[in-house]
Length: 452
Image (cartoon, rainbow, N blue to C red; front, side, top):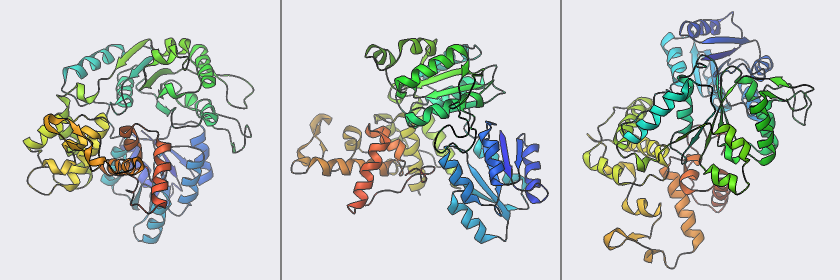
């Protein structure tokens, strides 16, 4: 991994950097926030920033958000500086590390940053077949299109491919094409020169240059507007990009992976996606099955997530009862692996007995059939009746469904929007309305507080 230290290396923070280096990290250093931002803009591909708490953590976090640089920040300071620690966390730092540094603490933080292993937990033959094909093509230079419903693990599959490729020692860079407005996506992908547009305060290296020599993942590429599709096609074909406001093209060497939760052949037929770009990206297609199509993976993944979240919360990993496993196996999992992970996280937090029992998962027959919400009851033969909904307005039922789904997802807006089948922007607008109307709305989940 690559670590950026912002602060003086003469003091205790220098010792922290030495520990990081001994644990295999590559370390960059900047003396202040502005110089640190220059390192980040240069496309060095930093995985973690550690900043001396005596500097302005708030200024750093604000700049990262305004320039759309998604990198976790950890503040460091003397253990007696309690007020500074509180201010750093409130400003947006993910963690506070007391100095002098503890080697094991530094190591655990570095591990947490890169803990998303490229190993994919599975037991079902359908998933094993996809992984076999992925391993077979990973070492080639072919572009690969990874398709599947939201929550099936498309980005994790992309990381798996990169880890097995000849580019494994270089950068893996991902950009979410659906999360960035069209007018900003060009700069995000290709970079920009200082003054190219309002807010371009300095030259910024784009994702293509950042991934030079490595792998670039275009996540949800089907959401890209036609104008950007044309620019992307040129970059893929010519292996060169134009920075926004730049005077000459820049040569790049990247291996392209792309994901989509849509049927791109239908998108091409309808004119929403360029056929020539589709054929460039779809040299090899990896179609990930939904979780309901890989039933043998459900208990294996559930136990994996129990262990993961028990450790994360300092709790004992409880076994899952047989009745609870039957419940998990019978659920439809519209949000796929992502929903299962959220559900197990919830169960770990709520369980206090000898085993994790069914009620801890918050899944019922009603919820499995209708999504959530009170009133709809299963009729004879397991068919859902809507009699209990008569007399209620559509807006009331919708509000209850949205809030219940959000609670089921532990406040995670992105996961809830996926399960509900609506955009994250629509969900946030509705939650803002509900809050203004006085309804209790679950707080954002981890990692989403700055986006809510």
